[in-house]
Structures are given as structure tokens and as C-alpha cells.
Length: 276
Length: 285
Image (tube, rainbow over the protein chains, first blue to last red):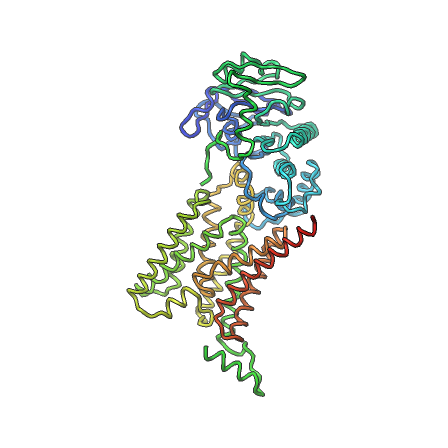
């Protein structure tokens, strides 16, 4: 069964059409890198797959069903919670997401404790369980967020910019970890990012968004001057140098630019929702 | 406080009288316990949610309600409770939009205090009512007051327990909670209504101006002292009860106002916890 099927999907956010009649099929167990310029709709697409945003046209199916309350989906949001400034320990932070929508006291029970242990172990974060969040590095917090996303044993992981504001060394660690977990559990992954290169060794295929459209395929098929020029609506050249890919426009290197904009900002504006 | 001084002199006579022999002291300890239990538990989540200042502002809105109630001839506590509940409900509906709106919250706080002064002036020029509301009057708690405080306290603790699981989820991981189908607005409204009750209760002991010390001091100290959520809530409650009871006892002994002692102890707890945390992290480095 396919993990995700998009058929003629149109998504509108804040009065703007972000994606227009997009079709794509993502198979179970695939690792998909999701790219595109700011505002191309990466976060919007993830929110639609979660069922938080209804398409104005077309259908979205997740494992053959309409999306509902993120069922069978693990999610790592882009907006980092304010909890990272608190002195709470890693285990309690992860545990907050275990059946967190149920009413009543947060009593875990043996099964809950086992599942949290399993999630922490899977992301190699057992030593973080007792440490306060406020003392952790960005990479360590990212591992806890991944553990949280694994609770409930999802078959699909949606990871929204997990590499943002991480050093290149930690970026590789996170990509390697996600790849290993994805293989081990046989789950599908949608991984949004600004830079292509850190994900090259891990991705099965890429989904490139831009100008309301989407291109899905292998890196060789999609990351070409022709396809990207269409998506960016501007002339783009793709250079391959020593196993790295540089996406260049007349105005300079696009990916490096995008990264500079977002490097220190967790709340950039390719999504514009509020939680009131 | 003439009664308290009589108590002190009689301790020296053969019929040793302790402070607990006095009805007003037993009532004060009882009311202090009921209020501190709720304030400690609710305060912990207020600090966790970064809403300490909003909690402070709620009590000020209550001042306008309490004095307004005096003016129309109903018990001030019900006016206080009504206003804090209305204001906390509105705050809950605003939800995330409230974050970082300190100026707006401050303006409403000031306006409410101003209205309270006007109502008080129209009602009577007696300063004792104003002092009791602003700084609390725990030695003036009657048996009926205590019953009301205990009933409201139990109700708000039960409500807090009922929403605690989604409250923690929504507080620590709002985006994820929303994705899992939790209504952040519902959780926010329910929690702030409980805060409204807790604030109205706390005003009975420490008064409008000092609610912060009882609700935020012990909770913020607990967050510094333990990284465990469960232990944090328990510690926050223990510290709040400890500060309140010690404050009442010290007031009996010194004849200084209990609100002064509770405010001082609440603040001291936070400062001591901060110093302890600094020392601990300094030793690790």
C-alpha cells in the first residue's frame, strides 16, 4: 500500500494558493527529501498530510485513508517548542507526547514506559533521559524530538526542517540516524530541508516544490537545470562537483542564500498559521 | 492585632496556650492550606506555560470585580471570582496571541486597578476594605469562607487533574499536540478558568497585589530544583503550603502582616533555588 497519494491537490494558506493540482505517490518505506524555495509550501504540504489543512481541490490519502488526527504518522514540527529553555528532563519531555491527547492524569503504565524506553533507545538517547533540556545541544534535542515522533509506532515520519540551525557535523548525525531508524523500522520518511547535499546519501527520491507545482523523482531526474528553472520561475543551473550538487541562479547560489536567511530563525514564514 | 498579642502573653502562664487554640488561627491555617494547595499546583503550570505575568494581571482584574460587587451589594469574593473567570476565559480564547503581549496585559491590569479605586471610592471611603482586598486578610477568614475556599479548591484540583495530560502535551509540544487532533484553544480556556479560580482563592490569603508571590515563587523554585515533572508539581505544592503556613505562624509571633511573610518567603524560595541551581551547574563545569 502506498504511504501517501496526492491527486490533483490544491492547497491554500492565508488567502494564497500554495500548491496547485499536485499529484504524487510515495510508497511505504521510502525516504523522500522535500525541497523548494521559501514559501514553496513544504510545511503546508506536511500539515495537509497530517489533516490540519483540507485541500481546496483533489484528494490526499495516507495509507489508503483520508488524513485524520495524524493517525499512523510521526511528526517533528519545525517550530521549536519553548520547552527547550526549561529544566525539564528529556524523559518527561518525550513522555508528554505518549497518548498526550487523552484526558486525565499523565499516568503511563508499564506499556507506556516500555514504549518510551524503546523510542529513546532507537534514537540512541537513553543518556539524555535524565538531563535537563536546557543543558542540551540542538542535536541532542533533535534526537528527543525524533523519539517523540516515533511514539505510537508510526508508519510514516514527517520531519519538518530537522537540520535547521545545526552545525554541519550534527546535520550528518541527524540524517544518518533518521536513515538508520527508517531502514530498521521500514517506515516512509518525508524530510524537508533547504540544502540538498546533507541528504544525498540518505534519500531514495526527491520532492521539489516551487511556483505551486511539484516534481517527484530521483535526484538525477529532478535536480536538473530544466526542472528547477520551471519550479523557481527563473533560470537555474545545476552543477555537480565532486559528489556535491550546487544549485545556482543568475543571482548566486540559491541554497546558500536560503540557508543564510533561515540559519538562526526557527519561525520563518513558509508557514503562517497560528494556534489560537 | 490585639488578639495575637494576648496569645503571646498567655503562653508564659501555666495554662500554656498555643496559637492553634485560637479559632481564627485554625481557620487561617486551614484557609492557607486550601489556597496554597491550588496555588502551588496551578502555579507550576503557569510558569511552564510562560504565563506568570498573565496570572498576575488576572488578580488585578479581580480587584475591579470585588469592589464592583461591594458597590452593588453582593459579597466581594463572588465579584472577584466572576471577574477573574471572565478575564481568564477571554485570555484562554486569545491563546497563543497573548504570548509576548505584555503591554496589552499591563494596560488592562492598570485599567482594572483604576476602576477598582473608583468603585471603592463610590462605595465608601473606608480604607480597611481596600487593604483587605489588596493585601489579603487571612486572619479574617470565617467558617463559611473556609468552606467555600475548600470546596472551590477541591473542584479546581479535580479539574486540573482531569486536564493535566493534554495540558502537559499542549504546553511542551503545541504543534505536535495540534497535529494529533488536540484543540489547543480548548485546553488553554479550561486551564485559564482553573487559574481564574486559583487566583480568586489566593487573593483571600495574600491579596491582589501579592498573588504573584504565592502562585509563582514556589512554582518557579520547584522548576529550578528538579527536572522531573511529577516531583516538580509536588515540590511546588509543598513549598507553597510551607511558605503559607510559615508566613501565618511568623505573623502570629511577630505581629507583622502574614501577607508580608508569605510574599517574602515565596520570593526567598525562588532566589534560594536559583542560587542552588547556579552553584550546582557551576560545580559541574
